[in-house]
Length: 422
Ligand code: AMP
Ligand code: MG
Image 1 (cartoon, rainbow, N blue to C red):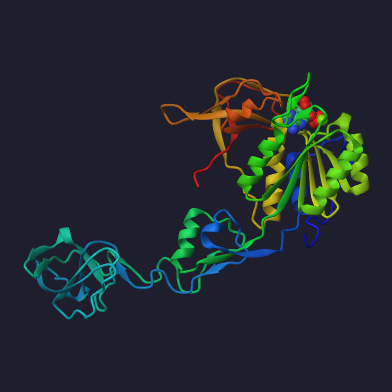
Image 2 (image 1 turned 90 degrees about the horizontal axis):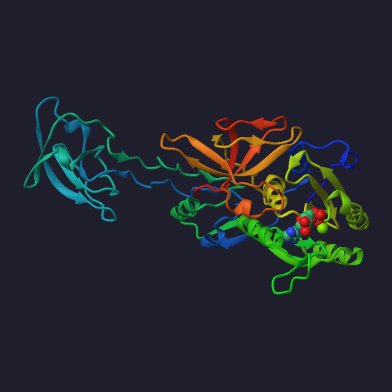
């Protein structure tokens, strides 16, 4: 790590248990504190899928490089179009994709041409093969055609020197193709952030360990692994750490030595925070927030050593909600790209929804369409913050605003989609 990944640590300590932050305010404070990584690396094109461009890509030549035909037909010159009736032209050659016609066409001449083939020098339109009468090496054409029709002009896709993809772009499959079409085999991308994470709690066991009475398997490290890996960071799993100040200090110290970002789950709720606070006060600068949301009310943010720190609540659904609402956008900024806002759609709830006013709720929902194409959303049953199956059976969050208390079935609600096509 070359430098601290966050600048100022927004203070909200006074807010704890007194006032709470809105989701927007919490996100704005996180984003304001994060500084994008400056380190870049060169990668082979295929290895760069999903990575963030560190420098723009400009076109070293125009695309297409040559004016070419968009259809199969005959390349002619507009001066030969008859003003009335038909006109006969002599077919003097052919132009195939990869095998251009080398001569030029004179008045009264045409060239057989295929899709993608280079247009002969003096031809300026293509007439579809279905629209001509062919007799041996002569064709008859009528006048109902325009100069430029069915022709792809050189540079119409990308002019020479144009910025094709800006810095900060997350490379998609189409981008890989686009970059390849310009002849580049390597690109410069932002280094992957190293994100270390661990779970806290005496009740947590790792897979393979026997469960004592009251023990549970640690699931947060798996959801975090999945969410971080999808995002394209280096995810470093540091295991389970006991609720013990020495163990916690040691874990934070080794995490801060190896990572740009530390994420923990558990230990920030009101009962446990005091003790986490003592440990963190020695190692860095961390604020404990109360966000007006459910799930995910307690949230800690700051710096441990040189690493940015996110302390997420322990409940499995809270971890996922706070990750997607706060951590993902902050990591995206760190990675040098503009945070993606979730796709929000309006849908009709099929059931009555209730909540407490004064906080935003992220209920888990299943989005579908009825026969008329209307979007419908059905909450996935029990909405407890510990019920991870409600996340797996959902495909969206139903976002219920601060002041909402009850929504009758049939009301419009906003949903955030989990998945997009590309
Ligand atoms: P905490 O925020 O530490 O008070 O934890 C809140 C709830 O989440 C408790 O029921 C914990 O047992 C549970 N929890 C905490 N960490 C994990 C984890 N890594 N995996 C599954 N459940 C957890
Ligand atoms: Mg705990």
